[in-house]
Amino acid sequence: MQGLAVARTTWYEQTREHRCFDLGSNASKNNIIRMLFFIHMSLHNNFSDETKANELWRKIENMFQTKNALNRVSVFRKLVRLRYQDGCSMAQHLNMFQGLISQTVSLDIPLANEVLTLLLLGSLPDSWETLVVTLGNATQQKDLTLDMLKSSLLHEEAWS
Image (cartoon, rainbow, N blue to C red):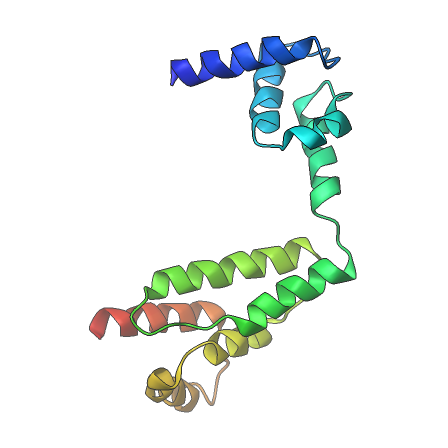
């Protein structure tokens, strides 16, 4: 771990001559180095004037996570097209689903609990139809929540 820190510090010292960073504290310096380490070199000029890690993070966020229509459509398509493959882990499927939900929230796409529940049910293959019908019949009087559905899916996988 220290070798990696030394390598990053060395990288920073070598590139410092080419960029004007006034980093102030070591913590901010280290955080900026870590962030720039994962950004392609062709984009470094866009961030060279940042002196604080939190300002750099906001600038990166604004550059890559714009809330335009194309990003919204792309995330929503992924959510609608998500399909569970028999033989895969239900936990992985639920993690992917939750990740897409998080992306929709960050892009200000409001989705009601009922819509999310229907999308998750719709992502299941025909081999899970028995569970879908059972859940539908059992919850006719009350709403099926997303948490109840996730729990039922994990339970069903464990018993299969």
